[in-house]
Amino acid sequence: MDTTSLSSILLETHRPAKLEKIPDDPISIIFAFKWIEYLSEKVGYSNIPDVLEFYYNLGWLSDRAVLDLLKLLKGIRTGIEEEEELPPRLTITDHLVSLLFIERLNGKKISSDILDRIEWEIRRIRKGVEEYYGI
Image (cartoon, rainbow, N blue to C red; front, side, top):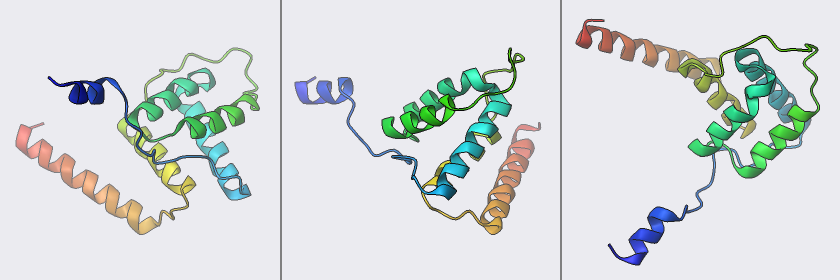
């Protein structure tokens, strides 16, 4: 193995994340807060940084986007002294919702037609899997 291929394995190359930063316009800030609220309902306030780290590792969020979201998170009070124990894992649907928030924060409009098409594709795949595996 030559040093070029070894260095490419060991050193992470920068590739742009799906979301580089949280835009500072009012609509984007509202969507960011709604996304934080959604994640808080799913995994609890204290587990949100772990979810953001997961999305960073997937390449969905940049360093700056994570920091922007953590700044917003820092300014939120949950109103609950001790959070009830919520599972720190999200379902596939939860991750898809997060991906839709990310796309919206990128300025892409998510129409109901697109959401219907995604839902139809998911049902079609599930049906195929059920028939193939007899589930």
